[in-house]
View 1 (cartoon, helix red, strand yellow):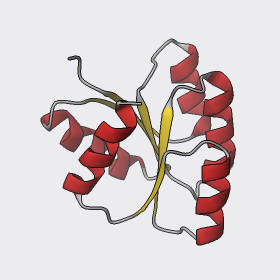
View 2 (cartoon, one colour):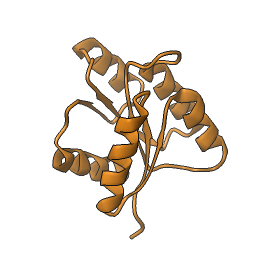
View 3 (cartoon, one colour):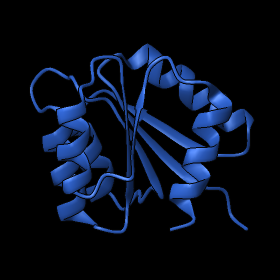
View 4 (cartoon, helix red, strand yellow):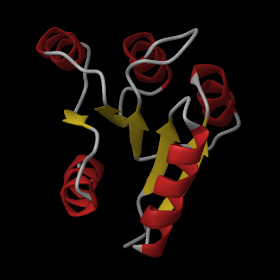
Length: 122
């Protein structure tokens, strides 16, 4: 079985890079980008992730709009919102738009890995 490919989209690039490193230590292939524009450029360059970890509150293009862009590009990509500023309303909207899961920061790395594996199995 090949390693799940994970794209992390977070305007806090230090967080995204650190998370990518932690996931790579656990056998994933991970890439961190700082926003929607970089993420769509990676997707356009045929870097297809199995799972996207997406921040909700980002300057410019927010997480829900980025979710829509990802799903328009490839509806098979599973997206997990990972946020420190969430609400029940944004979680419900995300689920209606094809979101796999909605997790609050800080998240336990073990729990996150379980959810990534579940999403990647779809």
